[in-house]
Image 1 (spheres, rainbow, N blue to C red):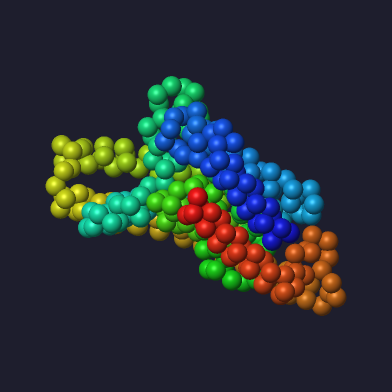
Image 2: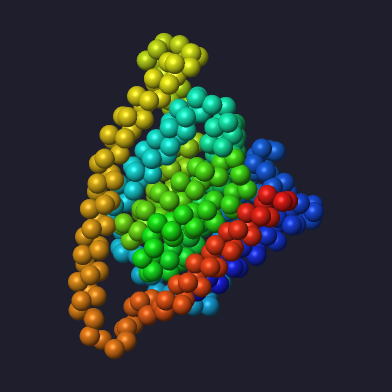
Length: 324
C-alpha cells in the first residue's frame, strides 16, 4: 500500500513541476510572488496532491482507523506534542541563526524555508492574507501531509524496525514537496520531529499538533527573539559577538525547557511499546493475524520493495527539482 502511495505521490508532484515549468499550470512555483500565488501554490503542492494520494490509498486498501489514526488521543501526549513542536522549532531556528553567524555559506544552506519566511511578510496585512498564511503554512502541512506521511506511509515503514532510516527517507521525500532547496535541511528536521512524535505517541493527532506548532515557531521565532533581545539590551542587536551570546543563551534555555515535553512523549512511547509487546505475546500462538492486525503479516520482501520505492522516488523528485 505505502509503496503505491509513494509512487502516485511522486508522479503527481513531477506532473505539477512539468506543468508549472512549461507555463500550463497557470501559477508560479514560488512563495514570494504575492499572497494569492503563495496560497494557490501551497494548496496545490502540500494540500491537494497529498490529500488526493491519501484518498486513493484509503479507497483501494481500506486500512482500519486504528492503523491510520493510532491510539485514541491522550491529553498529555497532545499537549506535550504541541509544546515539543513549538520549542523544537524555536530551538532549530535559534541554532541555525547562531551557526550562520560564523560563515556566510551557512546562511544559504540553513535558510528558513520560504513558505515560513514569506508568511511573516504576508501575515497581518489583511484578514484574508492572515487566513491564507495560517491555512497554507500551518494547517495544510498538519492535516494533508500528516495524513499521508504519518497516517499511511510511516506506519508501513516502522513495521520493519528501521526507524532511523525510515525517518530520514520519509522526511526527505516530503521536504522536497515544498520546492525549497535552501530550506531543505530545516524541512527534513521538521519531518524527523514529526516522525518521532507519531512513533512515540502512536497518535496522528499528536503528530499533527506537533507539526502545526513547529510551523508557528518557524513563522514567529524571528519577531519573538527580536522583541526579547530589545527588551534585554534596550536596543537592536548589531554586534556579532552579542548576537552569538544571546542566541547561545536562548538555545540553552530552550534545551532545558524541552526536557519536560520530550520526557513525557518518551514515557508514553515506552508504555505503548510494553503494551504492544504484551499483545504480541498473547497472539504469538495464532497461525495468522486476526482482524485489525493484518499489517503484522507484511513480508520482508515487501519491506525491501517499500524502501527501494521510497529511495528511488525521492531521488527522482530531487533530480527533477535540481534539473528543472
